[in-house]
Image (cartoon, rainbow, N blue to C red; front, side, top):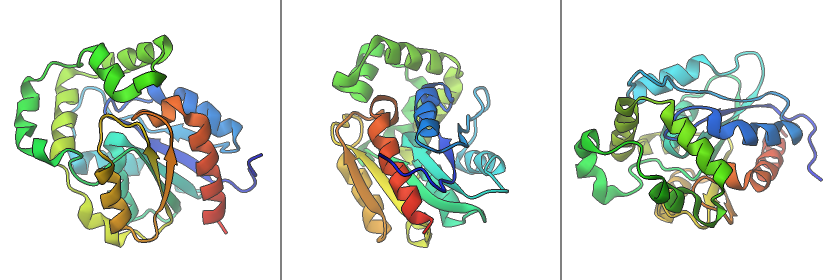
Length: 237
């Protein structure tokens, strides 16, 4: 059984949709595991923000009165890395889930401008195959569709382009807080080299691999929160 003593707050930066909808179930699991103050920070759904804007928006909503763990999921990994490199006073540790420091598919970087013409959202069968794999269920697909529907197409396209252009590798050697990287063993969206870049750049980072797809928190939340709680407890010693 997980020891839930002295767990800090948990703040989660979401994936590409930027909403909190896809994280409701995981937040419930986090609270059940002892993170009594667990919440996701949703980005604006109708306002295009660059990396600086997203970082500033997230920083404004981080706890100032109690210690916390910051969890950056997928698209938000580079934003979380930038925050941890210049940490708020109460940041205790950083968790990264199926994410990257720079373009997860470097060969696609030159095509970032073409995202302005991409259909959004992508067809559900394609998203289900890439993001969920054999863990796909009707309820998760419904939640994913609803989350994407909340966000304007212009915002989704801008975030897709940002994911292909962003480079937070300069933040890696400046991160001093404990770091846990969650890798999905069956991630069809992102190559494992994206995580390897982070692990090489942060020498003290820990790796925890979980059998699951890219949307790891949504499908294997139980295994993820068990690892995060143990990590957060150790980080506080």
